[in-house]
Image 1 (cartoon, rainbow, N blue to C red):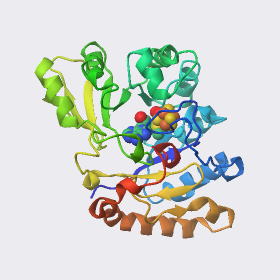
Image 2 (cartoon, rainbow, N blue to C red):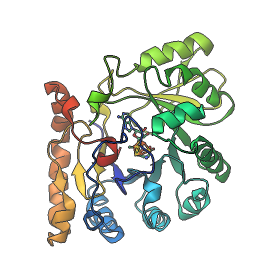
Image 3 (cartoon, helix red, strand yellow):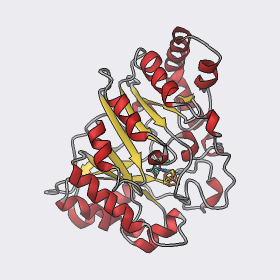
Length: 328
Ligand code: SAM
Ligand code: SF4
């Protein structure tokens, strides 16, 4: 079991997109009320007095769409400036990035993952549920701006959806030939949306790798960090290709993370709901940091067992929350 030192923090559960695999249009999502969101002060208290003392040093800001959180640049600055923070990164849909990338960088953010499921505006808009003016160009501008500003590594996340964008895998992989970007293909997960896709709900990473191998060849690359992606490289390419295969492989033994939702629930495992801690309610009830640290340590100790529970019992598909609610 890896040391669990990586916390994914959801800053907000709302989003300006409606990706069909995450927050499909028309789905009734119970948004967190503003007064139930952890305030900046509460979040920083939890990070400094609870998470850092129990061993978390790496933080990823996510959502929902994290750039929608008011004051996100200042929050980034506050977390980045903590001496114990070894790594701070963000996952964003990139729509607001062009106007914010420089400020985020100046505040101390250096690593960014941007979701880009398609290079074709029409397909992209279909996936993100957009019915008005295309949003693809603005996201692409956000990616280019992040590149210019100097974010490194710059990672693009692609959820591969059968019959929707799977034919673009070679085009997306080709971006790494001339750019030092990391393109990561994610197997679609039936989280809170299992009803949406038919028999072929996901395309396996190995199938994608074979297509890329047939075209250019593929070598295993150095894995930086110990995240969930298996990293490969097209020979001679500047960037890398990552494959996140949570459906076709079980990487629970590599799991080094917990998730904090925007309303303060600490979740030890993405795939099941066992053992969650309601840190916000505890904090607001005046429970002291020493007690919260004790509870988090207990959860850390139970994590290896929790990790496998949903998978072993086959209940993972029954997860009722979407990624945007958990903090994907
Ligand atoms: N809004 C931001 C974004 O889209 O990058 C951050 C939050 S989003 C929930 C984080 C990541 O989860 C994105 O890369 C998204 O593509 C991925 N994701 C969401 N739902 C998913 C699903 N059902 N299966 C696999 N990945 C999913
Ligand atoms: Fe929004 Fe990200 Fe979910 Fe898409 S994947 S709906 S951008 S939170």
